[in-house]
Length: 179
Image 1 (cartoon, helix red, strand yellow):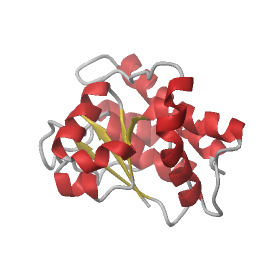
Image 2 (cartoon, helix red, strand yellow):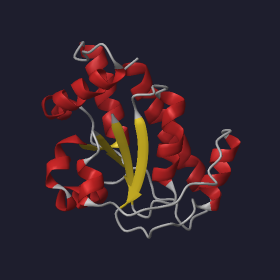
Image 3 (cartoon, helix red, strand yellow):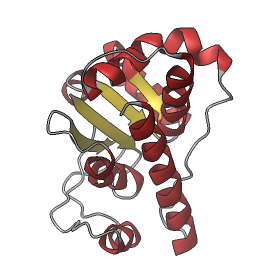
Image 4 (cartoon, one colour):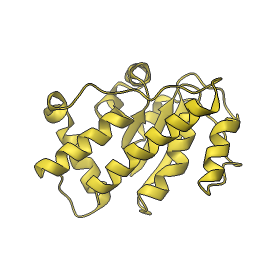
């Protein structure tokens, strides 16, 4: 299963999601990647995001940004964004991928709801994640409004820390619900 994190520039939030995911979903069958809707290719991770990754014991030095393409979106089994406009951009770029594209905090809420209602099925984590995707349209009305994770680009370190904390919180919920 390929999980693609998408933010705007692919240098702040989505690299953190990509680099953190293996810590939460320790499964060799799940591969993380990331891209940006308006990013430039081959840029290093933002220094503040890099600092947070290093504090978490993750080496971000080999990360390089890339822009999302229809092929990248269509090749992902799950796409996790940070703001509604990114989801809209993906729907325009790769309409077939829109059914499996969510805001990260919203997908975490879906996982928690499905776990609580007994809707998660499957023998593997991949199958359990797919069962949440399959139930998404049915359960969406039961959940609170999707929340964005603010873009910390060109902002002070506390904004990066807040985004990092929100990403970790969402990944924790997803991991527990699909364990």
